[in-house]
Amino acid sequence: MSIQTLRIATRKSPLAMWQAIFVKTQLEKHHPTLTIELIPMSTQGDILLDTPLAKIGGKGLFVKELENALLENRADIAVHSIKDIPATFPNNLGLMAICQRGDPRDAFVSNQYDSLATLPAGSIIGTSSLRRQCQLRHTYPHLVIQDLRGNVGTRLSKLDNGEYDGIILAVAGLKRLNLETRIRMPLPPEHSLPAVGQGAIGIECRLDDHHTQHFLAPLHHHDTAICIQAERTVNNRLQGGCQVPIGCYAIWQNKQIWLRALVGTPDGSQIIRAERSFRPEDTQQMSIELAEELLNNGAKQILNKIFPGAFSR
View 1 (cartoon, rainbow, N blue to C red):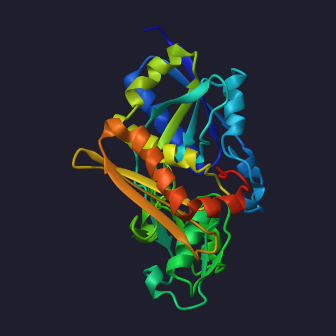
View 2: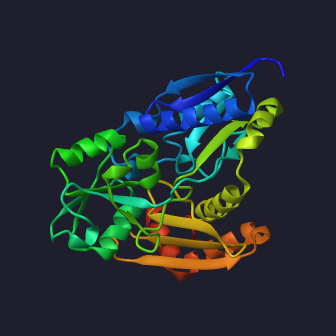
View 3: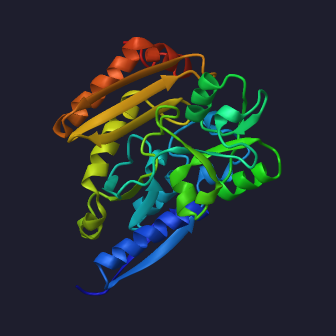
């Protein structure tokens, strides 16, 4: 194979750069003659740090600029956290590889307390995720949940400065940044159902760029991809985004897919849950049916308050 150059679009945050370098290293391992260039850039989600994501609205806050680089042929692939990727893609772009998933759980981080259960009433917990806020408020109504934006380092600094008694971050992100010692307690999915695709890295490229897709093939992890398909199918049917408290998590169990999902109100007063197990070949249909079960059991009313008329039928 002749020496060629492949350009990777990535966000500039330390975690995003870690993910891009991870993909770069994997590509070099499988294609030693390949020259790889990183193209760091800022997205709207990186710039608008003073506003909660739910209030910014829209989808693709962390990917649009990277996708524009692909469409304008300024990059060949874009590396994303799967949880940041909207349900639909611009014309001629698609998710061509999903790497093996890291730890999908949320983590409780605190300098004083060992767990959420030991926090006294009135303790301040920081997270901007409506999904996390909803589940925290539902289980721990005596805690005060406040918004917390910024990259991992910024959030930890705010905790260390005493602005919060504890914060919620992704286990995978802390591990990837060698900050695993900051984790006081990983939160089991039963207590904090993860976000769609949490812990997984996705690689986007142009649909007609078969040459690049050839390079990406060895990085694709089939078992992870099936789980991500299930989660994203549910999220797509529910029109999920930063404005909606949705959790969804699929795992392999006894050669089947075990899929769990929830939709809640931002104040945590109501959470609708559903789960089912199915054969991997039935992933698409069963994931849609699970989403319909959520909608029929009360999620439709919750979501219609956020997107009026979206689920009128």
